[in-house]
Length: 510
Picture 1: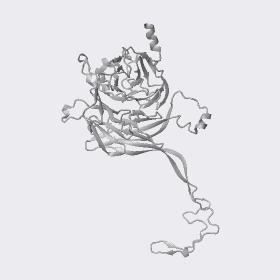
Picture 2: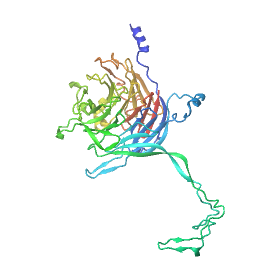
Picture 3: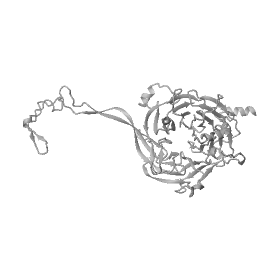
Picture 4: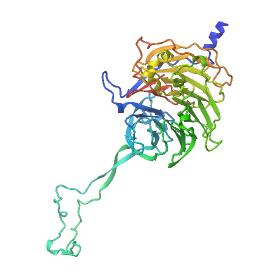
């Protein structure tokens, strides 16, 4: 029986083998002892739908775009390309494309409130006619950007001949006598003594407009402002390509990309009396394929799935996903660490990944009894929650992401570490990596109880313990809570990760 079980693990139907992650490239690497400017810290990161472009936003309000190095190098006729012998890269590499200032610091005079320029979220929209389109937002204002290459036109072959031109005078060769000029009432002069020389002016020719190099130009197409009383924490594109949502602590608004002066409030959790407020919206995301469905998370650890076809104001939810804490294990920090900081739909739309302070949870939208998998990210910090509360680290908002095939999930931690977990049936993958040129820190396997497949509707729930017994960093050092990896993104079609560690962007492949 044991041998049979061992063979089942190795069989193709079993869980996939853990990935071996390797360093690919880094942008903005800082040298030892170099001080990082606050405005240079990366605050948002996002791949586009095809994975050909990557965008990052920083606390200085700038957007920096990167593109794959192999999308333009091999442009040509298919017949010509087939004759060439290009080396096949095992992974995609990116290069700097352009950057521009998206937001500036503002001041709300009515509320005496400073609005910082920090980019909270950036989202790619559908490209068209070779142009790239993005949405970016700070705390109050959303902007719709178009990035396109423009040919720089210059006027050449001017009528300037230094050997024949006269300084501030008429063209050499023209016979205009001062005595023949007649002044008129408006100050002009008339002359009948002007004549072209025989054969014309050989040095006179029309200027020529030529196109030299091309420059990338970023233009703000729309500004969506004055729709949120509280700080915007999420924006999400709809699969219809025409609308998007923006969410703050108490409301979710629905926008049309082409209409910037009007939005529809579809979710409002603000009570009549603010003293009755028990939870706030922490994240919102459109369904990846169904344009009428979206989900939003709350500070109490719940996820609500809503269908916009039910009513104009989505006060009631279609499904509620939450995992109740056992009364015996409740503490002062229970509600704080239960707050969900990020949610993501899987590419197929069947699952939702959520991140709270201590765990990653994977939910099946057809099963609201509980998560199908729970991954402990840094359980060894639980005894230190009091210290984390005192230095405000317990309120850090970590993001999460899923692989394009839905077989793995990833999220960040402290000391610039990030975790990769396998979430398919039989997988025991739980990898700890560091955002550096030598990423491998700890590669472990998890012990888990029998679990359901992700496509199954059975109520079997598994709990993956990860590296709960670490307690300290893999090398034995204490964790550094000032260096935290909050933002990361998974390439939509490849096993490639982009991680933002302070002002540096690290990329890895497997």
